[in-house]
Image (cartoon, rainbow, N blue to C red):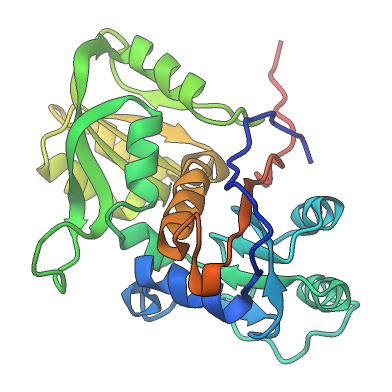
Length: 298
């Protein structure tokens, strides 16, 4: 895995007692309730003893071997990831399977694993709020696809916002590139590079299911990940619609990690959470994008 150097998000430590895993999960779920997750999703505690002490928490996008390596090197007691390890049912966690290997490594090392996925996507602020700020949107944000169960209308998938100063598409695409972690695939753009961009829709992670919502919102550009050829091609062929910016899936969700760490710190009370406990949090510096290299014809 490639490594992208970033500043770490740290919560000050003290000599007060360590929080338990139960303390941490209760506090985290006050911010990102599991009930907000989609019905098909798998969120919550994957492994770990609720009574075990937690002093160091690593936030990462993916529960993969490289992230476990980083957690063990740092001495983390808990890993909180955005993507689930067990999204689909399994019948075995034998150590000779990829998922089983992760589970065995974590349990042997006494490291817990917790996942916040679509509940963090729909939260306000959530994954797309962090993406919106990372690419330069300012001012109030509204959901691209509102959560109909939220009476306040703040939660939902994706966000819509504006740039403080309009930019040409070529310049905004560069701003997006600079605001996100570097990945082998980089950033792809569809549309007139001289188009003036003011209003922007974003959705962290795979977002082509929201192409229709982006068009209906009449924004100037839609920033998301994992756009497929045919939906993107048909979208651009329809005149008058938004331009498209396609980023690596990992890159579009990575900005949320710092937000998640900060909100957990707030929920625990930073200077003295449950029973005066404090935790130290860190954002993973490991790029876990699936693609490691891009080759260009010459």
